[in-house]
Image (cartoon, rainbow over all chains, first blue to last red; front, side):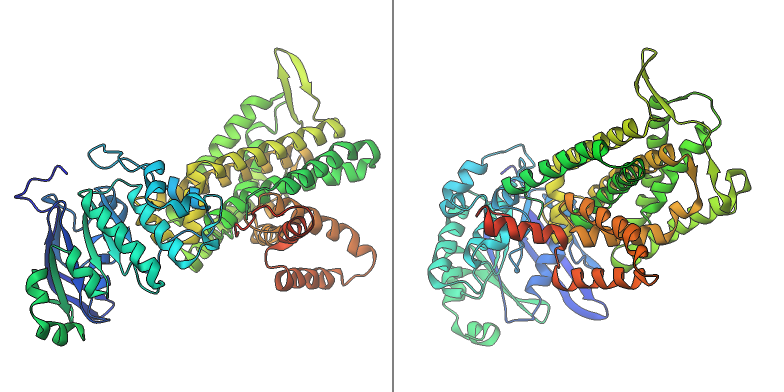
Length: 241
Length: 327
């Protein structure tokens, strides 16, 4: 992680994003340091996924500024943002059903922006041994849990500095969810920064260093996990729990 | 569905053996017909790269077939001795350049707009040749001689000989099939296949998808140009109809009928359509109605085309190998 402590790995300032005429994000500010794990929380439809999509250029903001390691990236295309060491695990899992598990993994393989190649096929399969048994299966022949593992494994194959996980445990069986959380903790332990969107606050808060709560397209709370854990009013007000 | 299982390889080898033996038993007419079908198969295989693997439905692919044919006739048609190597190199280079220019503009669009733009370009080329008396206008253009395939003054293949021409085209068909199979097994091919599944996801993996689509478009256009080159060399007569939307539409039909995303499916589709066009008029003047019915049947009941049916049969009876790749 080559980013200096003074410069955030990724920073967003005053993001305003629209879908057509609908004003979705209304001035989102957030930042993440190298190796840090942060969460984006909020009720459904508040702009969490749109924020993630704006960060990587899939839904570019109309106004605001995004920088990666201090360099302007607001108007970059998605693939250019991703090539700067950012991996995205989308909400819909995003595996390619018409490629085998092995092809899904190898097509993503590349060194990180600083030439790191810690995450290769062997290491990824060590983390997800189940995928090792399914290498020749097509993507559409995997269970939901296996698809999610494949998506995370594929993201790791890009040797990212930052991994963005959108609802990574959504719709999975409880045991599989536990497995995914173990993997997310492992990713954190390797020094890769993460932005995580997930509804499972009990699993999320102990992992995250900082948390953002988004309500109606604005950041309404930003703080450390301990503060959030000690403030049940915030849970009720913005998270509905 | 382009995973080629062992039974499919055996099936393809049997088909190849039949094609190798055919000129020995077939009449001169049918040898010529099968030559024409194999040339069209090269054209439809190239279209499968776009439709079946990259997800780009081009309704103007015949433009490159026609451009390849016209280039050979215009640049070399009046020569007494046409050097095969030079004529092929120049024809394919210029067709590839045309595909690059057209593709560069078309890949900026998607869906219905891509279809309309490719159709518009093809019609532009069609009317250019149709309204150019210099290039024969709507009457078309004749070639005086066929290319001569020589190496150090020794003739390798006599294209005036129908049998030689047949095997020459068969070699090209096999070569194009193997070339595209190799491309699709490489990481580049995996990106194309992934683009067809979900382009946005591919961008989110760090790939500049327009570049990949453009390369796919140029490869497909150049191979279509090769088919046009072979057709011009075969018939020595080129008309603007080669570039028309009707040819593009027929090619799409052959790809769908045979099975998209399989490479060998379009070859089967081409054989079926051309042979039906040849046989059905013997029985009824309303043969196009029957042909339409067959196509409707295949689309409704065999969504993966004839190749999909072959995959199903091979999986059921011969093997449990994985062939779940969807076209």
